[in-house]
Image (cartoon, rainbow, N blue to C red; front, side, top):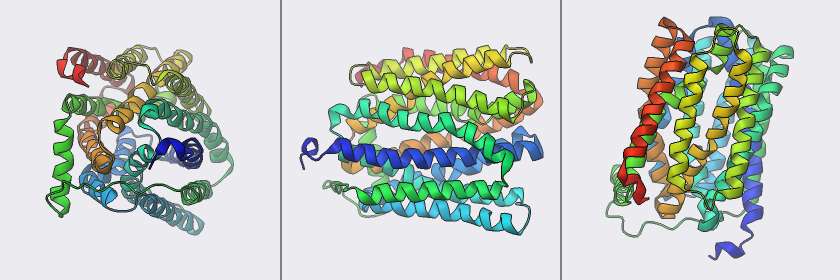
Length: 403
C-alpha cells in the first residue's frame, strides 16, 4: 500500500482526536483518584503502591502481549482493550452507588485497567507507522504529544471542579464516555493490516518474544538507548506521582494549587510538543533525548532546594520540566518506529515498555521509602542529582551516535 496516497493525515487526526479525548477523561479520573487517596491517607507509600499496581501488568506481561499485537488485527485489539478498561472502571461506579469505595478495590481496578493498557498503548504506537509515512513519524510524534498535552493541560482544572461537586464514582462515568469516543474513532478509520514476519522460525509466544529482542539487538545503538531508558525510568515515572503530595504537604497548597501545578506542567509539555511537531523532522534525535533528561534533572534539583514558601517558583519549574517531556517520549517512540520494521513493532514497543517498567519497582521502593523518611522535597533533590548523572552517562556512550 502506498501510504502517502491513502489520506494519512485525515486518519492520523481522527485516530488521535479520539485518543486525546480518552486521554483527557482518563487524566481527569487519575487526578481524582490521586486526590482521593491523598485526602484519605496523605501517604506517599499509598500513592506509590497505586502507581506500582498501575504498571505491574505492563512490566510482566509486555513481552508476551507484544507477540499477540503482531499476530492479530491491531484495530480489534485497540477496541477490545478500551472496552475492557472502561468495564473495569464501571465496577467502581456501581460500588460507589452502594456505599463508600474501599481503597483495596481502587487498587484492584487500577491493576485491571493496567492489563488493558498493556495491550492498548503499544498497539497504538505500532499502528501509527501503518498510517503515517516514515519520513513524517518524528513530526507526527510531536503532534500526538500535542494532543496528549492539550488533554493534560485542561484535565487538572476539570478534575478539580468535578472533585469539588461530584462523588468520585460519578467522575468515573466521565472516563467511560471518553473510552466510547476513542473506540468509535478507531472503528471509523481503515487501518491496514501489518505485514507478518516471514523470517519467524517459531510459532510459540516465548520464541516470538525472543525474536523481538534479537531484532532490537541487531539495530546499532538501540540496546544503549534501552539501557538509558531503563535508568531514567527509575527516577522519572515515580517522581510524577509525588507532584500532588509535594504541592499539598510540603508547599502547603490545596487541591486547587495542585491542579494549577499540573496545568503548568502540561502547558510546558504542550509548548514542547508544538516545537517538536514543527521541527521534529530536522532535529538530532539522540541529542534531544540527552538534553531532555538533563533539563528534567536541573528542574528536580531546583525543586528540592525550594523552601516551603516556594510554591510559585515550583510552578515555573514544573512548566520548565514539562517542556522537556515530548523531547524524550515523542522522540524515543519515533526512533523505534523509524528503525524497526512494522511487523515487529508490537513486540518492540511491548518489550521496551516492559523492560523499562521492570526498572521502576526500584524507583518506586526508593521513592516511597525515602520520601516518607527524609521528606518529599529532599527526594526531589536526590532524584535530580541522579537524573543529571544519567544524562552524563548518555553523553558518554559512543554507541548512541550509531543511531
